Length: 216
Image 1 (tube, rainbow, N blue to C red):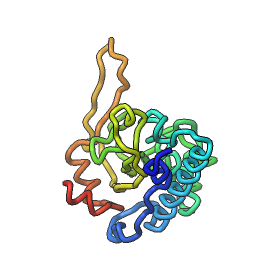
Image 2: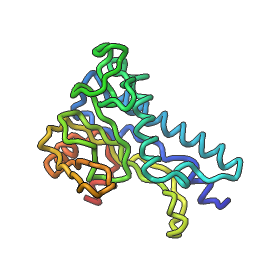
Image 3: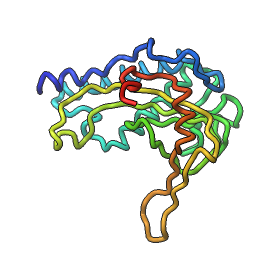
Image 4: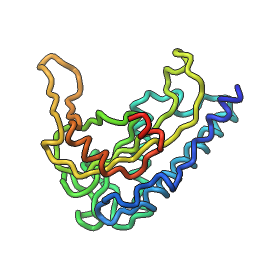
C-alpha cells in the first residue's frame, strides 16, 4: 500500500475556527453539537479505514458507490447529533421525514411525515442538493470531499476525507424545483434546491473551509 494510501486513511480534522458563530440553528441545536458529531464521524471513518488497511482492504469511500457513502455520512449525523443535542431525536419511523425531530413531540419519537424537524443530507456537492418532494422544512447539508469508487480508474490519487462545508436553512416549497418523470421513465422522482433556496443555505453557512470562498 502506498504512502498516499496510508495517509488517506486518516480524515482531515474538523477545524473549530471554520464555524459561523452567527448562524441560525433550530430546535436547540448549537454549533458545538455539530462540531462534536462531525468529529465523531472523523474518528469513526479513521478507525474503519485503519482496520481495513490492516487487512489490506480498500478504504470505505473507495469501494462504496458514491450515493451509498453519502448516505452513510448523513445517517451517521442523524445518529450522532441527538447524542449531543438533547432537544432533537432521530426519527424512529422507517424512512420517516424529516430525519431529526423535536424530542417528545411525537409518540415514541416517530412520525411518517412532518414539517417539524431537520432533514439531513451528506453530499460531495456544494450545490444542487436534491430531495424527493418540494417541502417546507429545515435542511442541513454536510458537504465533503473524498475518493470515490471510480477514482482508481481515473488515476486520481488517494486523498483523505474532509468536511468542506455545512449549510442549513428553513426552506419553503418555492425554494425547490420539482422534477417529475414520464410514465416510461425509471428515474427517481426528485426535487432540487433552486437558486433562491441555495442562497438561503449559503447565507446561513454553519461550517466552511476557507478554500470554498476562494473557489466561489
